[in-house]
Image (cartoon, rainbow, N blue to C red):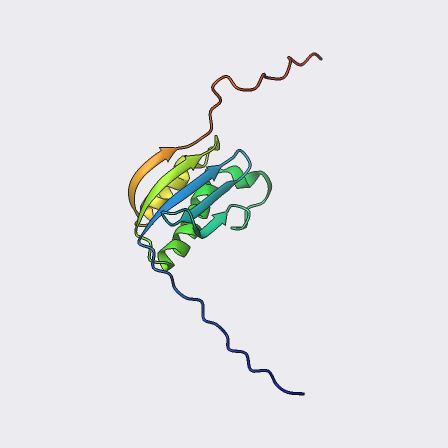
Length: 129
């Protein structure tokens, strides 16, 4: 048998100094996604990926831990200045923003992009028990 010598491709280190952080905070989970200015994903982290299970994923502590984990990955890519976009009604929003600020990122702006209906769909009828 001939031995196949495959060259292992080294992961190239991208240098992205400016980025956008998307914090998606639902009632059950928190996702923190770092993207470049065009919207391409650089790195991400979720509360479940960081070791939280069940109802603990939606807590502010889990959001802080998740944001710190994503920040470490983004700093490896050379990111220093970020804009923050927050989406969702979860209680981990503020904790994630504070964690990003304490990790040494320069925050350019904070924007809430939670979708709000302007009298959209008709709500379901009242529950009778």
